[in-house]
Picture 1 (tube, one colour):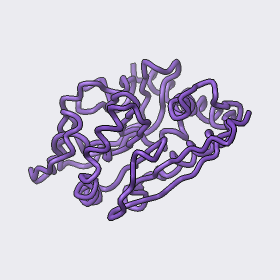
Picture 2 (tube, one colour; picture 1 turned 135 degrees about the vertical axis):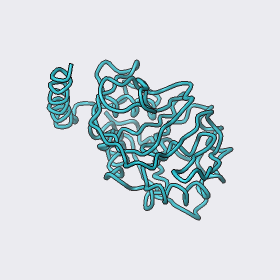
Picture 3 (cartoon, one colour; picture 1 turned 60 degrees about the horizontal axis):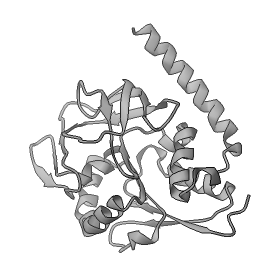
Length: 247
């Protein structure tokens, strides 16, 4: 099926500095599924000091970075605050993984109690713990997907006052200790600490997001994801075994 040469533009923002956990694969996965669905699809990779016209992109992605790199990006990303707010309110498809989405809250407070202003697009606040990072395999569910999500969470932060979380925690870590919810969603903005990378590990989530980018879920060709689906089933059954053992 060819979408009549409709071109899609993907922006991988801060690709060189917010790049833990092989997260660039999320962008490649999105490009591949859109290309397989007949769209012409280009990726721009921009970073600190570039001035991107965010409104020119159909899909915007920011990955996870070290705490130090997050601070560097926080200074730079403020120039996009108004644009990001407009795009989120207008339903543009944006995915931010790891600690990148924390920058869109009110504040990020580090382990030494220094507080940094975020973009204030969301009401939540982030506090980093000085104890070691917490890591866990994860199984999450989403009200917009029939299948659970799988992956890995590695973070040192607690996030409070998330009004509209993205996922429900079946196994693993929520936004803060004891919280059964994870991430944040508003319209087509998705923020999550789920890595692995999330769109590679979760082909059904990838299909869902690609449908949003294409503005038509029926336009997405899902036939070429059999390998990814098989990998997903293996991971899910292993994690579910472990969940049942721990009951």
